[in-house]
Length: 427
Image (cartoon, rainbow, N blue to C red; front, top):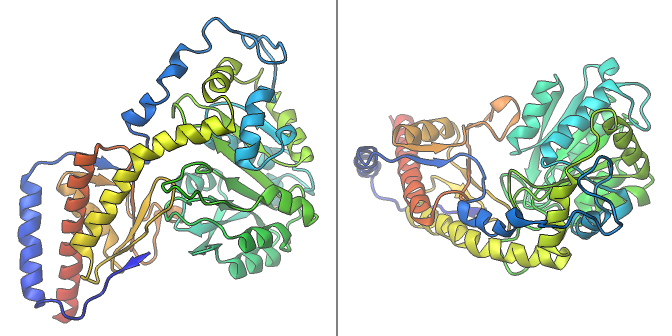
């Protein structure tokens, strides 16, 4: 997190007058810019253009399976081998399924609610109310799933090493209704934190009042680095097995921000008992995944090293955008005391923190000036950021010139909202 403070700022009246003039100029420009979602830019998608011509005339997998036909609920073994290393899951315990890891998280919740997890005493729906721990700031779609199924959400603060483990351990051990925790362990959404080895170890070995407690380990940014020194995290699945809690971790991943975002492959990894449980449920709703798409990914990526090389090409497109965000925030807000922001080493987001009570105002003013941001509060359960301070910036989709316009405009809104708040408090 970057922190800039200066007690020697010019008089507040002058700062506020300039901020209002800058905002008038911004609103007069008639901008139409969107920073709401962390979508790959068209140039990133173009890197996977060759997928569209694959698999060509080939229709058999390495073991002779005809990928055009039914079956193969586990997914192609050769694709599972590629991502086993990247997701830290043995290939035999990894499933390659449809195009969306979010769908897999949804299905796992449904199956746990309506069926019986390994180690569970009964279905979750028969144990209501149930709750999940939600590190904040966090991923809004995780929170939406909990709301969809009436699962209570308990916020847990994030630290530089991951969720506050003292709080996680206290809550998990003290209440059998706490059934799980959401985790984005590497370059987390939205603040870019990667979990420390100690955090992973504590998640694996901690006491839980619920015998069927599950860690929803959404490793969405496993290979999404922004520097030439990729961050590594500890193997949660292995740590859980070593701690005597082999069924605790559900590992999710996908190629959604690696190849074609809307036509990727999603993965589920866990213990043999959990894999068997999911397959038993899946065979009642599916005749098998899209193995043609899985084969084209095998042919395009060619191996784990091929994924890494492809992601270097992705980094070449993304890194300048993140550098532009940092440069503009520092130039326009550095020394004002009005904001702090993250400098992520990977992932898709920058977290901007403004003075308490200002985030909604900043987002509203930006929208009125033609710059659409993720709603303030989206990083917290129920859309409620108690301090109204967190704003998520998604730099990936706009072109560099548009992104620079949007961040410049955002800083104008931060200065206006921040100085107005100071003026009110000084009055």
